[in-house]
Length: 595
Image 1 (cartoon, helix red, strand yellow):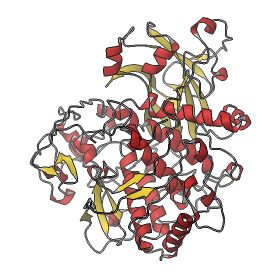
Image 2 (image 1 turned 60 degrees about the vertical axis):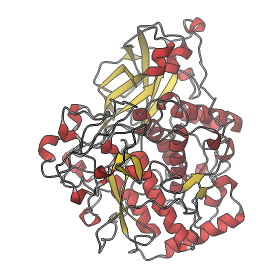
Image 3 (image 1 turned 90 degrees about the vertical axis):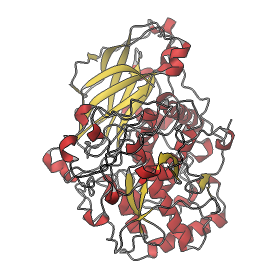
Image 4 (image 1 turned 180 degrees about the horizontal axis):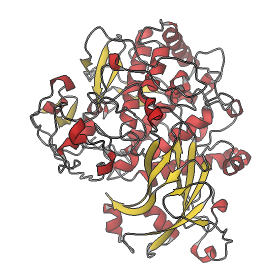
């Protein structure tokens, strides 16, 4: 089995280089990297992208009258292959306001009142400068493989971070609150009052968390005067790493946290399809360790390969200035990101604190190891296929965040600054075998035996519908008998839209294709194509009745071939609620071709 270093890495964005390229992102014109405060209405040169991805565009109904709300922002950007130039008001990246404009976050019922905002900075934010190539390369180790010397060093750094005054932006408390501020409505889009900023369920998910962890790691290293120090990653996609790493479960070490699910301590193995105590997931409790490993590896294959075959499917939907939050997350954010959050969170706490709710997740040191492995998935994904490239839309590349560095100085960092973790940020991951690369889910029922299998009576879907019980829908395909060349050029995708629910509920539903009886299909079965999952979080605009409306996509090309239905004009889709029964509405399902 291959490791990351054995896989071929492609350039971050297949664009033409120009003499005016920014040193931090050679594919992005330097003029487009100007800070928000200096932008003008002068158009920037277009980026030429050979990876034309028209699907990284927002639907027209996802914006809040951008032509009105963007007046006065300045800095409209030129067109690229990934931008819809019919509406120039769309061409504006999201920018975080200065920290002094951070407001009160909306916390869930039962949460201890707290402020999530960082301390104000006496100076204006400085523009991020990538460390030079002569900077020592930090290597993030797999948490289950570290030795005692590393544990001692990590413990020292974390103790010092926890000992800093609460008013210090480098303190563990302040670092934990970053996630609360960016995820629970404390920030609004810069220049756009009353439009909340959210870094989940969109294309901001991967870059925001990469930048967040980068500074967290730099702070730890500076506290012990070790510029080579790198945080660990929880290697839950490898058989040997599927339990909570030992250094996080020992109360003597500062990596320990009391607010975790007591039933999930080692030797319990993580369930990457976790859904709490519904009947479906209770059956996983009886898995042997070897069965759980195969179960998890099949899920990783499905999420990293089948459901991540285009940039939009992997990163999530476009999210620009003036857009409503939560347009749709990528495959990895839904599973295993959300499912591991739920698996770790303590069900004995009112809101499954700490990991089980976004406002409190950063309080658990295991959060950073979890997200370090999520970040590692970004690097791996770019090695797995021709279409697996970073997004070239300047509204993604120029989206920015404000974070404090190891010197307690406020920094403005953009997505373009973090595309190459090794070259631009000077860290990489310890090589371990990638065990899921060839663990394709297997067909549960062959076409010959499908007609003999018992078929439960399910309600036929009529959209919009309240998902209070399993439903079955017949969905027409855009094209039958697609050739091998067509499959290489475009992905057949199932799109579920208008998923609506209250933000503070736990929501999960499973999706099956051509499954006569979904109850007989395990998560490692090919007919099970994935789940929609949601980790609860509140927003300050909930009082205005703003629940979440989002979407999700699933890859079908491999599934259709494996099920032998390439010639079928329709397919049968089954939706099965696991969490939030009767509290989730779905507006529609369709199959599209996308590149």
